Image (cartoon, rainbow, N blue to C red; front, side, top):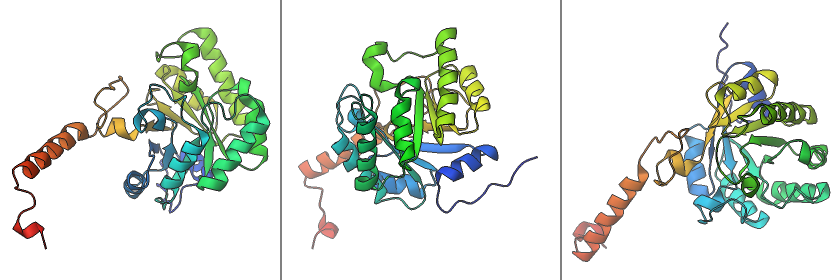
Length: 272
Protein backbone atom coordinates (compact mmCIF):
# COMPACT_ATOMS: atom_id res chain seq x y z
CA UNK A 1 0.00 0.00 0.00
CA UNK A 2 1.41 3.39 -0.98
CA UNK A 3 1.78 6.04 1.69
CA UNK A 4 0.95 9.68 0.98
CA UNK A 5 4.03 11.87 0.84
CA UNK A 6 4.32 13.99 3.97
CA UNK A 7 4.99 17.69 3.58
CA UNK A 8 7.92 18.41 5.88
CA UNK A 9 8.31 22.09 6.74
CA UNK A 10 11.68 21.29 8.36
CA UNK A 11 13.72 18.14 7.84
CA UNK A 12 15.10 16.47 10.96
CA UNK A 13 16.85 13.17 11.60
CA UNK A 14 13.43 11.82 12.60
CA UNK A 15 12.02 12.96 9.25
CA UNK A 16 14.61 10.89 7.37
CA UNK A 17 13.81 7.73 9.33
CA UNK A 18 10.09 8.31 8.62
CA UNK A 19 10.84 8.79 4.93
CA UNK A 20 12.63 5.46 4.78
CA UNK A 21 9.76 3.73 6.60
CA UNK A 22 7.27 5.27 4.15
CA UNK A 23 9.30 4.35 1.07
CA UNK A 24 10.05 7.98 0.16
CA UNK A 25 13.48 8.51 -1.37
CA UNK A 26 15.77 11.07 0.25
CA UNK A 27 17.53 13.76 -1.80
CA UNK A 28 20.91 15.07 -0.68
CA UNK A 29 23.42 17.48 -2.25
CA UNK A 30 26.54 19.25 -1.10
CA UNK A 31 26.82 23.00 -0.60
CA UNK A 32 29.66 25.08 0.82
CA UNK A 33 28.52 28.72 0.67
CA UNK A 34 25.49 30.89 1.42
CA UNK A 35 24.37 31.63 -2.15
CA UNK A 36 24.49 28.04 -3.37
CA UNK A 37 22.89 26.70 -0.18
CA UNK A 38 20.02 29.19 -0.54
CA UNK A 39 19.32 27.92 -4.06
CA UNK A 40 19.61 24.24 -3.08
CA UNK A 41 17.33 24.67 -0.06
CA UNK A 42 14.72 26.66 -2.00
CA UNK A 43 14.65 23.92 -4.66
CA UNK A 44 13.43 21.45 -2.02
CA UNK A 45 16.47 19.32 -1.14
CA UNK A 46 16.07 17.19 1.98
CA UNK A 47 19.67 17.14 3.22
CA UNK A 48 22.59 19.47 2.56
CA UNK A 49 26.00 17.95 3.14
CA UNK A 50 28.76 20.40 3.93
CA UNK A 51 31.30 17.93 2.67
CA UNK A 52 35.04 17.84 3.09
CA UNK A 53 34.88 17.70 -0.71
CA UNK A 54 35.17 21.48 -0.29
CA UNK A 55 38.87 20.66 -0.16
CA UNK A 56 38.63 19.62 -3.82
CA UNK A 57 35.98 21.83 -5.43
CA UNK A 58 36.46 25.02 -3.40
CA UNK A 59 40.19 24.96 -2.60
CA UNK A 60 41.61 22.90 -5.49
CA UNK A 61 43.34 20.22 -3.42
CA UNK A 62 43.84 16.77 -4.93
CA UNK A 63 42.32 15.03 -1.88
CA UNK A 64 40.00 15.85 1.02
CA UNK A 65 42.81 15.49 3.56
CA UNK A 66 44.12 19.11 3.74
CA UNK A 67 40.88 20.82 4.81
CA UNK A 68 40.89 21.89 8.47
CA UNK A 69 38.23 21.95 11.17
CA UNK A 70 38.23 25.76 11.13
CA UNK A 71 37.63 25.74 7.37
CA UNK A 72 34.78 23.24 7.70
CA UNK A 73 33.18 25.44 10.36
CA UNK A 74 33.48 28.46 8.04
CA UNK A 75 31.76 26.65 5.17
CA UNK A 76 29.09 25.14 7.42
CA UNK A 77 28.30 28.52 9.02
CA UNK A 78 27.75 30.01 5.57
CA UNK A 79 25.38 27.21 4.62
CA UNK A 80 23.38 27.24 7.86
CA UNK A 81 22.63 30.96 7.49
CA UNK A 82 20.96 30.22 4.14
CA UNK A 83 18.66 27.30 4.88
CA UNK A 84 15.05 27.17 6.03
CA UNK A 85 14.05 23.53 5.42
CA UNK A 86 16.98 21.19 4.80
CA UNK A 87 18.89 19.19 7.40
CA UNK A 88 22.54 20.30 7.41
CA UNK A 89 25.12 17.53 7.93
CA UNK A 90 28.77 18.55 8.33
CA UNK A 91 31.78 16.33 7.66
CA UNK A 92 34.32 15.98 10.43
CA UNK A 93 37.60 16.48 8.53
CA UNK A 94 40.54 14.12 8.48
CA UNK A 95 42.54 14.18 11.69
CA UNK A 96 39.77 15.62 13.86
CA UNK A 97 38.31 12.36 15.20
CA UNK A 98 40.33 9.25 14.31
CA UNK A 99 42.99 9.22 17.02
CA UNK A 100 41.12 10.04 20.22
CA UNK A 101 37.39 9.90 21.15
CA UNK A 102 37.81 12.99 23.33
CA UNK A 103 39.26 14.92 20.41
CA UNK A 104 36.40 13.64 18.25
CA UNK A 105 33.89 15.00 20.75
CA UNK A 106 35.66 18.36 20.94
CA UNK A 107 35.64 18.60 17.14
CA UNK A 108 31.94 17.72 16.91
CA UNK A 109 31.03 20.20 19.64
CA UNK A 110 32.92 22.98 17.83
CA UNK A 111 31.04 22.26 14.62
CA UNK A 112 27.66 22.25 16.36
CA UNK A 113 28.33 25.38 18.46
CA UNK A 114 30.24 27.49 15.95
CA UNK A 115 28.46 26.60 12.71
CA UNK A 116 24.93 25.78 13.84
CA UNK A 117 24.98 22.54 11.84
CA UNK A 118 22.45 19.85 12.70
CA UNK A 119 24.62 16.71 12.57
CA UNK A 120 28.11 15.46 11.80
CA UNK A 121 29.36 12.73 9.45
CA UNK A 122 32.34 10.45 10.10
CA UNK A 123 34.06 7.95 7.80
CA UNK A 124 34.60 4.41 9.06
CA UNK A 125 33.05 1.59 11.08
CA UNK A 126 34.33 -0.54 13.93
CA UNK A 127 37.68 1.25 14.06
CA UNK A 128 36.05 4.56 15.08
CA UNK A 129 33.16 3.22 17.18
CA UNK A 130 34.48 4.79 20.39
CA UNK A 131 34.56 8.23 18.77
CA UNK A 132 31.01 7.76 17.47
CA UNK A 133 29.77 6.65 20.90
CA UNK A 134 31.40 9.65 22.57
CA UNK A 135 29.76 12.08 20.14
CA UNK A 136 26.35 10.41 20.36
CA UNK A 137 26.49 10.39 24.17
CA UNK A 138 26.79 14.17 24.01
CA UNK A 139 23.51 14.36 22.09
CA UNK A 140 25.04 15.13 18.70
CA UNK A 141 23.46 13.27 15.74
CA UNK A 142 25.92 11.20 13.70
CA UNK A 143 25.75 9.98 10.10
CA UNK A 144 28.12 7.19 9.11
CA UNK A 145 30.05 6.72 5.87
CA UNK A 146 31.24 3.35 4.53
CA UNK A 147 32.58 1.92 1.28
CA UNK A 148 34.96 4.25 -0.48
CA UNK A 149 36.08 6.61 2.27
CA UNK A 150 38.06 9.43 0.61
CA UNK A 151 39.91 10.35 3.82
CA UNK A 152 41.59 6.92 3.57
CA UNK A 153 42.58 7.30 -0.07
CA UNK A 154 46.29 6.77 0.58
CA UNK A 155 45.47 3.53 2.37
CA UNK A 156 43.37 2.29 -0.58
CA UNK A 157 45.67 3.82 -3.20
CA UNK A 158 42.79 4.24 -5.65
CA UNK A 159 39.24 5.56 -6.00
CA UNK A 160 38.01 2.27 -7.46
CA UNK A 161 34.83 0.44 -6.38
CA UNK A 162 35.07 -0.98 -2.86
CA UNK A 163 33.72 -4.19 -1.26
CA UNK A 164 33.74 -6.30 -4.43
CA UNK A 165 35.43 -9.14 -2.57
CA UNK A 166 33.47 -11.25 -0.07
CA UNK A 167 35.62 -10.43 2.96
CA UNK A 168 35.35 -6.66 2.54
CA UNK A 169 31.62 -6.92 1.69
CA UNK A 170 31.00 -8.90 4.89
CA UNK A 171 32.88 -6.30 6.95
CA UNK A 172 30.88 -3.49 5.37
CA UNK A 173 27.57 -5.17 6.28
CA UNK A 174 28.76 -5.75 9.85
CA UNK A 175 29.96 -2.15 10.12
CA UNK A 176 26.60 -0.87 8.86
CA UNK A 177 24.75 -2.89 11.49
CA UNK A 178 27.19 -1.66 14.14
CA UNK A 179 26.59 1.98 13.19
CA UNK A 180 22.85 1.40 13.51
CA UNK A 181 23.29 -0.22 16.94
CA UNK A 182 25.48 2.64 18.13
CA UNK A 183 22.70 5.08 17.28
CA UNK A 184 23.67 6.70 13.96
CA UNK A 185 20.62 8.20 12.25
CA UNK A 186 21.81 7.45 8.72
CA UNK A 187 24.59 6.12 6.54
CA UNK A 188 26.31 7.09 3.30
CA UNK A 189 27.55 4.25 1.09
CA UNK A 190 30.05 5.35 -1.53
CA UNK A 191 31.08 3.51 -4.68
CA UNK A 192 30.16 -0.10 -3.83
CA UNK A 193 28.30 -2.73 -5.90
CA UNK A 194 24.59 -1.94 -6.22
CA UNK A 195 23.46 -5.38 -5.02
CA UNK A 196 25.51 -5.01 -1.83
CA UNK A 197 24.20 -1.50 -1.14
CA UNK A 198 20.62 -2.71 -1.55
CA UNK A 199 21.32 -5.60 0.83
CA UNK A 200 22.66 -3.16 3.43
CA UNK A 201 19.65 -0.84 3.04
CA UNK A 202 17.28 -3.76 3.57
CA UNK A 203 19.16 -5.06 6.60
CA UNK A 204 19.06 -1.88 8.71
CA UNK A 205 16.27 0.49 9.72
CA UNK A 206 18.20 3.75 9.31
CA UNK A 207 18.33 5.54 5.93
CA UNK A 208 21.10 4.58 3.53
CA UNK A 209 22.18 7.32 1.11
CA UNK A 210 24.16 6.22 -1.91
CA UNK A 211 26.75 7.80 -4.16
CA UNK A 212 27.75 5.32 -6.82
CA UNK A 213 25.83 2.64 -4.90
CA UNK A 214 22.87 2.02 -7.22
CA UNK A 215 19.16 2.69 -6.89
CA UNK A 216 18.28 0.13 -4.23
CA UNK A 217 19.15 2.44 -1.33
CA UNK A 218 16.99 5.02 0.44
CA UNK A 219 18.36 8.16 -1.19
CA UNK A 220 21.12 9.70 -3.27
CA UNK A 221 23.83 12.31 -2.80
CA UNK A 222 26.00 14.11 -5.35
CA UNK A 223 28.51 16.94 -5.22
CA UNK A 224 26.71 20.06 -6.46
CA UNK A 225 29.59 21.14 -8.69
CA UNK A 226 29.52 17.76 -10.44
CA UNK A 227 25.76 17.47 -11.03
CA UNK A 228 25.54 21.05 -12.35
CA UNK A 229 28.44 20.46 -14.72
CA UNK A 230 30.69 23.13 -13.20
CA UNK A 231 33.45 20.55 -13.03
CA UNK A 232 34.01 19.12 -16.52
CA UNK A 233 37.02 16.97 -15.59
CA UNK A 234 35.21 14.47 -13.34
CA UNK A 235 33.05 11.89 -15.12
CA UNK A 236 32.47 8.73 -13.06
CA UNK A 237 29.78 6.30 -14.15
CA UNK A 238 27.49 7.24 -11.25
CA UNK A 239 27.36 10.96 -12.12
CA UNK A 240 24.37 12.40 -13.99
CA UNK A 241 24.95 15.99 -15.11
CA UNK A 242 21.74 18.01 -14.96
CA UNK A 243 23.31 21.11 -16.52
CA UNK A 244 26.50 22.11 -18.30
CA UNK A 245 27.36 25.22 -16.32
CA UNK A 246 31.03 25.03 -17.29
CA UNK A 247 30.19 25.66 -20.92
CA UNK A 248 27.45 28.20 -20.17
CA UNK A 249 29.58 30.17 -17.74
CA UNK A 250 32.70 30.25 -19.90
CA UNK A 251 30.57 31.45 -22.85
CA UNK A 252 28.93 34.16 -20.74
CA UNK A 253 32.23 35.35 -19.26
CA UNK A 254 33.85 35.33 -22.68
CA UNK A 255 31.01 37.49 -24.01
CA UNK A 256 31.43 39.89 -21.07
CA UNK A 257 35.16 40.20 -21.83
CA UNK A 258 34.39 40.92 -25.48
CA UNK A 259 31.72 43.50 -24.60
CA UNK A 260 34.07 45.33 -22.22
CA UNK A 261 36.91 45.30 -24.74
CA UNK A 262 34.65 46.67 -27.49
CA UNK A 263 33.06 49.28 -25.18
CA UNK A 264 29.66 47.68 -25.81
CA UNK A 265 29.26 47.32 -22.03
CA UNK A 266 27.99 49.41 -20.41
CA UNK A 267 25.62 50.98 -22.91
CA UNK A 268 23.60 54.15 -22.36
CA UNK A 269 20.81 52.35 -20.50
CA UNK A 270 23.28 50.69 -18.12
CA UNK A 271 24.72 53.85 -16.59
CA UNK A 272 23.54 56.74 -14.41
